[in-house]
Each structure stands twice: as structure tokens, then as C-alpha cells.
Length: 236
Image (cartoon, rainbow, N blue to C red; front, side, top):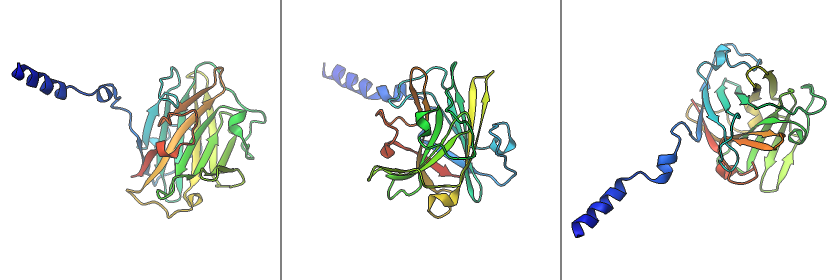
């Protein structure tokens, strides 16, 4: 009887845990931003040569981690000597909401309240990840950037990063694209070198109906502003 009990214990210990058995091996909390020194383009087109070797992540679940259908999202990342480049490819079902006055000439404060958006929250200072920068782009090329301080709950829309953005809708494929070209100097930290790591997260907000959030690293709250849950960007 004792031998049987010991064998049962050993067999139990050798079984994979539920979490490891259910883990998607393609999911990661790290995106690699590849260094690039060739010609760049502000057109949001993943077929451009600059994106050929860019690091990427793909996801389609909400802030809690529940799966979403037809909302597959891929984000590509690369960096040059002075700019961080991000390219979102956002799958959607049958409807996009674009806010009024769709243009890119000026900032649209509280853009998330009037339009679908792609968002990047980026915390370059690992000593204080409650301070980070937020960037949003809509399918209509509207944009906003904010300086976030979660300690004081201050979201400063008067901050200006100088980032450039563009958007494009492929109605046939039901994908819209958002490009962000963010000056590295806007982050207020030394220019990164290969091997440097920052914290960040990627999001999408959709009006629907129903209202949806698509999230790279689930925050496990109905709130995007949870920096402890952010993933990592590694400069390669």
C-alpha cells in the first residue's frame, strides 16, 4: 500500500500544472524592438521593408484575459538612433467608430471618449513606473499624447512629445493600421542602448456596441492604468 501511495505521489508531481498546460506558448510579456538604420516611412504599411525584421507581439483578449473573436491585434516595434516606431494592425468585426473632426493637424484631447483608438503606455524609468507616457491614434488619424503620473492621478494633456502618427483602414480585410513615431528624447531618459528594457503595455478601445477593450498584458481590472501589470520592451 505504501509503495502504491508513493507511486501516486510521484505521478502527481510529474503531471503538468493546470496553468502550464493552458499557457499559450506564443504569448509573452516581452516585445523586442529591433534597431533599424535604413530608410523609414510614415505610411502605416507592414509590407514596408523597415518592418521586415521588427519585433512583434499578437493578442486578442480583454483586460481580464478573456478571449475576443475577430479582434486579433499585432504590434510591431523598432527603433532608430532618435525614434521609437510602433505599428499596430487592428482586426475588427463590422464597425469602426471614428470621432468628429477626423484630422491629424492638431491634438484631440480625450480622444478615447469619442473614437476607437490604439494605445501605447510606455514607462522608461524602471525606478518609478507610475510615471509614464500615453500615446493614442484613431482610425481617422486623430491623436493625443499624455504625461501620466499615477501617484497624483494627473494625466497631463498639455505635454507634447512631438510624436508623428498616421492611420489607414483596409475595409476588405477588416484591419486598420496605426503608426506611432515617437522621438526618444520625449521620454526624458538617456537614449537606450541594446539590452535596455522599458515597461509598457498596448491597448485598444472600441465603442462597439458592445464597448470593448483589447489588451496585450491583462490588467485584471476594468482599468488600463495598472503599471505593475505592464509588459517589457527590450531594445535589441
